[in-house]
Image (cartoon, rainbow, N blue to C red):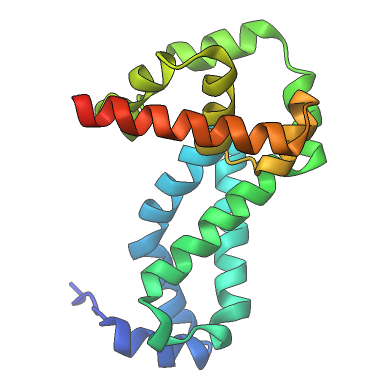
Length: 181
């Protein structure tokens, strides 16, 4: 039986920059699960999340030369790539169109088997649900779905200034509610 090679982060980076396929396989085997968890938390469609994961590892392969250990850990850098790729995916027109064209029954079946997000385990969604409707919608779109304030203004067809004012009020109210708990 072969001994499994383990690499420290300081050993991984130079070998990845040398394009070592063995080290790249090691990277995939040891980090794909954690990155996938982040991706599926944002994308929520497991098939699409698998596609995003593959894109993330291609980006890591192509962009490894841009990694700077002085700015943070390798895992954090990879996590940012995964997060950004996930957000780019859900913001894409193709994804938006596919979501708009789905039948209601698909959503019902998906949510019936869904796992609670980490925000549910600390009760954040319950606290957000107590907000006024105009604030709750903004918090949901911004923090749980990843939209920018400018995009929210477009989606809700309200002025950007209104979004900013309501978001500030919502966050102040959330802060107040969290301090009371």
